[in-house]
Length: 470
Image (cartoon, rainbow, N blue to C red; front, side, top):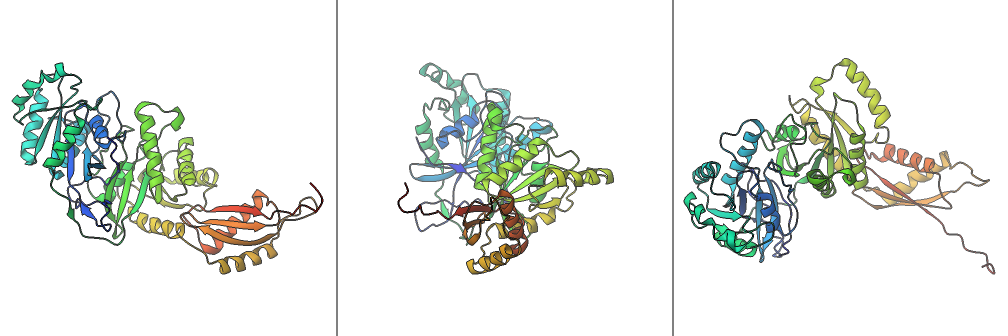
């Protein structure tokens, strides 16, 4: 099985269930059906999601509670497209964070067209399984009972007790080894409604990656912008593991916002869940157009903050730096933070900086204008004539320093691309890095590239070898 799959928008109760799905028919946007995967913790839901997708997309580890939010992925089987939603473990009478996780699973159930209720076939039905069945019946959605961990014929012969759950015939599968996966997918497609044409739109929402180290308030900011609980929030660092996609309306427009896992370590030093979460966060940045790097204004700017900023810069994405928890910052901390920004963030003076509080909602309305400004400059193109007129005046006023008795000259320039802006300087020789930085600074001052990295490449003119010399 090798279906194409990519992270899709998270499914929410008040969001129209539409996704851009390329079916090869005049780029028609369709409202695709939704499959929710639910069950108590550690029955193999995320492993089953990966089996349906045909690759390791959802984070999996051999401990309970790795998945916390409901996370949706675009899936395909025999030409049919659908959305599969992975959920955290559902438990009755859950408390605190476990209750928030269970609520996310219930919302996924209510918005699905078909529910896969996953149980562990190696043990008899539990009281938690029976309580989940009552929740599923209240939703009124079609349910397929999936008996997971049926790795051989002997176990398959022992699943008759699952009939007692009252959901009909249990469907045996081994999500880990793929046993019965194709037949289950056929059964899912038979239960799904056909995709229907959705209202077309001229362009999709701009894609934002929300990144930062653990516990800086990324999920809280997502919930504040969405004006509802889109992601599980807990004071314990590392609550978010999978990137959580949401279509969020703020600032008068719809944005595709991806809440990512907090990054503690370098990817090369991470392991297990953290390793795969790091890879998915990096992929979310690469798939985004602009990144909000969230920093904790009440704490010092750390080495990990710097690594995350570097990740965004190297990806070439537009950048907005948001200092969260501003409600915890007193006058002394503001003075100290100003010095830290000058010292630690001196390499990104061009970034747009916003002071916010996800808890109180302070200044979150400033994020949309900042994002739009960064994206506008990220896509800015300077006409060649205007660029070279400015450059000629610049190098005449401030020529390159003389090195070895000669000074290389800048002949002309062109903009080679956008998103981010890329410029090429054609010169008579190699330019000093300091002079290239000078040109970049003046370029930003003249053409306003606030909020975006820009790339400058120097192309020295090749010298022709004197005739007769080898």
